[in-house]
Image (cartoon, rainbow, N blue to C red):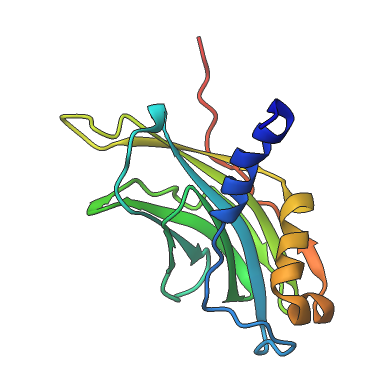
Length: 181
């Protein structure tokens, strides 16, 4: 096999591992005041150390609704789910039976009704998972890879994509910046 073809193998494996949430059906009819959230959530660990099952929650910033838990079984998780319109934030990260820290509503995004809302690629980097005396640490990074993911969503959900417009509402990173002295 030539070296030019060899680089394709990891790319094909990465794309094959993408998984979308099976809850959403390809339909041309959304409930009133509902939008579609599209996000790609990637989970990486320092040194590629194995980690327990990971989940993260999205929660309405203002409201009394319960949070939506998103299980992240793969390294690359394409999430396509319906949500009531409103302001949301990524909240609690859970690692197996260990609950991680809350992002304290500092990673907000918007879901508009009647639209496909791409909220960004969220990279969760797990560090120091096997710390003997405490919680693992983690970090979030936000990126805009909408040019890559929106055509994939349109291919998987053709009725939805032809019926509803797509908007980009990237997650904002409002966490305090640590100053180096």
